[in-house]
Picture 1 (cartoon, rainbow, N blue to C red):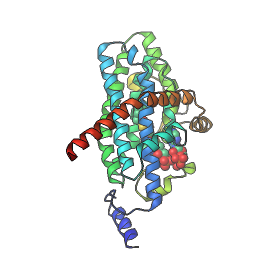
Picture 2 (tube, rainbow, N blue to C red):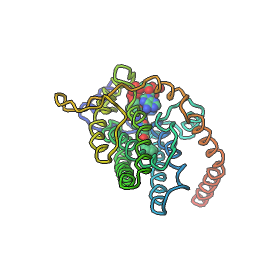
Picture 3 (cartoon, rainbow, N blue to C red):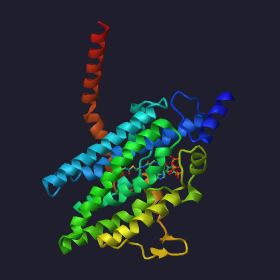
Picture 4 (cartoon, rainbow, N blue to C red):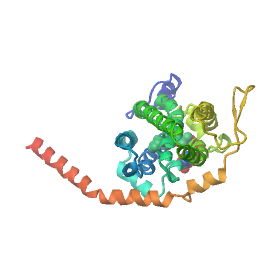
Length: 309
Ligand code: FAQ
């Protein structure tokens, strides 16, 4: 009872729960679920852009993209470490990703068909990730909140590199501008789905907000993203593919059209354009990397034996 009171008091004072503190089991389970899904998204998210590393149009673009994809691996690592502070094992979490019992973001199940997709991922996908993740820097669980601070700094850089790449396409040839518009047409709606189901269908939101894991509802953050992004589309000279998108002076926000929630449900269930391919590639990388994990373990044992001797 005293422990429960301490937990409630920490939340009420907007302070952080740390790994050694007592916490309700459901709070622990919710964090493991969200942090693991977030980590999985980061490492699966390396694939759509990674596919363009060998085809980047210049050495400069290739170096930038390589650094970005490596950052995503790093984000996955911080997040798996944050999840491990809750008493789970990273190997088990990876198993759950590989067997499809834990989710990752729907957005990474769409293909990257052209070079413009790489820039649009930076602009829209990293842009949406920032809007969703900046409030997580104030999440009530300390290790997750701290991991998010560094991740958000890097995501901001990713977003700007994407936008800068798109400015180059805007200032390029007609074919480049068409390629840009086509990529925007394909990524806009999936980016809006990153924020999760509408509030009325969001099963976890009420409890996660009460526990101060989430600070804003899915729809609130989605609206914030639309408001931030619509003027940027004007700068890029692209049209967002939504006939209902318009400024609403009364609400001081943009109105926008209805998201295809059937498509969202299909992609969550595993039936998106690239779900099978992403998991297959991930499992192959894990299997092919077994020798690296074995070598690292053998080295760690050898070092420990030296210290003991
Ligand atoms: N995809 O009750 P809610 C990135 C699931 S990282 C798949 O609203 P919640 C960086 C949800 O898990 C992108 N599943 O859930 C990058 C739940 O199922 P469950 C990832 C989704 O947790 C950029 C069910 O639907 N970011 O982009 C999705 O309160 C570029 C009901 O939903 C994060 O993970 C979805 N889009 O709110 C990398 C941020 N949406 O678990 C490479 C942290 C919902 O009960 C390149 N996560 N579901 O079986 C969050 O903020 C939250 O978990 C939400 C969902 C907002 C995603």
